[in-house]
Image (cartoon, rainbow, N blue to C red):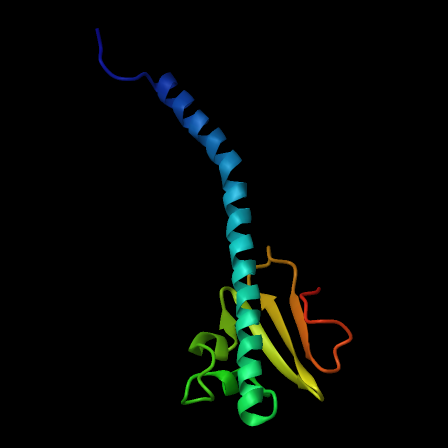
Length: 132
Protein backbone atom coordinates (compact mmCIF):
# COMPACT_ATOMS: atom_id res chain seq x y z
CA UNK A 1 0.00 0.00 0.00
CA UNK A 2 1.37 3.44 -1.01
CA UNK A 3 1.28 6.47 1.25
CA UNK A 4 0.56 9.95 -0.09
CA UNK A 5 -1.91 11.65 -2.36
CA UNK A 6 -2.73 10.88 -5.94
CA UNK A 7 -2.46 13.55 -8.60
CA UNK A 8 -6.26 13.61 -8.88
CA UNK A 9 -6.68 14.36 -5.17
CA UNK A 10 -4.16 17.19 -5.40
CA UNK A 11 -5.92 18.66 -8.45
CA UNK A 12 -9.25 18.59 -6.63
CA UNK A 13 -7.76 20.40 -3.63
CA UNK A 14 -6.14 23.02 -5.89
CA UNK A 15 -9.46 23.51 -7.72
CA UNK A 16 -11.33 24.01 -4.44
CA UNK A 17 -8.75 26.54 -3.25
CA UNK A 18 -9.06 28.36 -6.58
CA UNK A 19 -12.84 28.54 -6.31
CA UNK A 20 -12.67 29.90 -2.76
CA UNK A 21 -10.03 32.46 -3.77
CA UNK A 22 -12.07 33.60 -6.77
CA UNK A 23 -14.97 34.33 -4.41
CA UNK A 24 -12.86 36.15 -1.81
CA UNK A 25 -10.52 38.28 -3.96
CA UNK A 26 -13.18 40.68 -5.35
CA UNK A 27 -14.38 41.43 -1.82
CA UNK A 28 -10.81 42.08 -0.68
CA UNK A 29 -10.27 44.46 -3.59
CA UNK A 30 -13.50 46.32 -2.79
CA UNK A 31 -12.49 46.62 0.86
CA UNK A 32 -9.07 47.94 -0.13
CA UNK A 33 -10.57 50.55 -2.46
CA UNK A 34 -13.09 51.60 0.19
CA UNK A 35 -10.26 52.03 2.70
CA UNK A 36 -8.34 54.24 0.25
CA UNK A 37 -11.40 56.38 -0.35
CA UNK A 38 -12.00 56.69 3.39
CA UNK A 39 -8.37 57.77 3.85
CA UNK A 40 -8.85 60.39 1.13
CA UNK A 41 -11.94 61.76 2.88
CA UNK A 42 -9.93 61.91 6.12
CA UNK A 43 -7.18 63.82 4.29
CA UNK A 44 -9.79 66.31 3.06
CA UNK A 45 -11.00 66.73 6.63
CA UNK A 46 -7.41 67.28 7.76
CA UNK A 47 -6.89 69.98 5.13
CA UNK A 48 -10.14 71.68 6.13
CA UNK A 49 -9.11 71.74 9.79
CA UNK A 50 -5.67 73.05 8.82
CA UNK A 51 -7.25 75.76 6.66
CA UNK A 52 -9.40 76.87 9.60
CA UNK A 53 -6.31 77.10 11.82
CA UNK A 54 -4.36 78.90 9.07
CA UNK A 55 -7.22 81.36 8.59
CA UNK A 56 -7.35 82.13 12.31
CA UNK A 57 -3.58 82.77 12.38
CA UNK A 58 -3.11 84.69 9.11
CA UNK A 59 -6.56 86.08 8.26
CA UNK A 60 -6.73 84.29 4.91
CA UNK A 61 -6.89 80.77 3.54
CA UNK A 62 -3.69 79.12 2.36
CA UNK A 63 -3.25 79.32 -1.41
CA UNK A 64 -1.54 75.92 -1.66
CA UNK A 65 -1.10 72.72 0.30
CA UNK A 66 2.59 73.50 0.79
CA UNK A 67 1.64 76.61 2.80
CA UNK A 68 -0.07 74.28 5.27
CA UNK A 69 2.89 71.91 5.42
CA UNK A 70 5.95 71.43 7.63
CA UNK A 71 8.02 74.43 8.79
CA UNK A 72 10.46 74.37 5.87
CA UNK A 73 7.53 74.92 3.52
CA UNK A 74 4.72 76.43 5.56
CA UNK A 75 2.73 76.48 8.77
CA UNK A 76 3.24 72.85 9.93
CA UNK A 77 -0.47 72.06 10.02
CA UNK A 78 -0.44 68.98 7.77
CA UNK A 79 2.07 66.23 7.05
CA UNK A 80 4.81 66.42 4.44
CA UNK A 81 3.13 63.91 2.11
CA UNK A 82 -0.19 65.75 2.05
CA UNK A 83 1.60 69.09 1.72
CA UNK A 84 3.22 67.63 -1.40
CA UNK A 85 -0.23 66.81 -2.78
CA UNK A 86 -0.12 63.02 -2.32
CA UNK A 87 -1.85 60.89 0.29
CA UNK A 88 -3.28 57.38 0.29
CA UNK A 89 -3.25 56.84 -3.46
CA UNK A 90 -4.81 60.23 -4.23
CA UNK A 91 -3.37 63.40 -5.72
CA UNK A 92 -4.78 66.51 -4.04
CA UNK A 93 -4.89 70.01 -5.46
CA UNK A 94 -5.87 73.15 -3.55
CA UNK A 95 -7.13 76.17 -5.49
CA UNK A 96 -7.91 79.45 -3.74
CA UNK A 97 -11.25 81.15 -4.39
CA UNK A 98 -12.29 84.74 -3.58
CA UNK A 99 -13.97 83.71 -0.31
CA UNK A 100 -12.68 80.21 0.31
CA UNK A 101 -10.97 77.41 -1.54
CA UNK A 102 -11.58 74.30 -3.62
CA UNK A 103 -9.85 71.04 -2.75
CA UNK A 104 -9.86 68.33 -5.39
CA UNK A 105 -8.67 64.74 -4.99
CA UNK A 106 -8.02 62.43 -7.94
CA UNK A 107 -7.21 58.75 -7.43
CA UNK A 108 -4.12 57.22 -8.99
CA UNK A 109 -5.88 53.84 -9.11
CA UNK A 110 -8.27 53.78 -12.06
CA UNK A 111 -10.66 51.50 -10.14
CA UNK A 112 -11.37 54.46 -7.85
CA UNK A 113 -13.44 56.19 -10.48
CA UNK A 114 -15.08 58.80 -8.26
CA UNK A 115 -13.08 62.03 -8.00
CA UNK A 116 -13.48 64.01 -4.78
CA UNK A 117 -14.29 67.73 -5.01
CA UNK A 118 -14.90 69.96 -2.00
CA UNK A 119 -15.76 73.65 -1.92
CA UNK A 120 -15.25 75.51 1.35
CA UNK A 121 -15.85 79.15 2.02
CA UNK A 122 -18.43 81.82 2.68
CA UNK A 123 -19.55 81.84 -0.96
CA UNK A 124 -20.49 78.15 -0.91
CA UNK A 125 -24.23 77.70 -1.47
CA UNK A 126 -24.36 74.62 0.78
CA UNK A 127 -22.36 73.37 3.74
CA UNK A 128 -19.12 71.57 2.81
CA UNK A 129 -19.73 68.12 1.47
CA UNK A 130 -18.20 65.63 -0.90
CA UNK A 131 -19.45 65.56 -4.44
CA UNK A 132 -18.55 64.22 -7.85
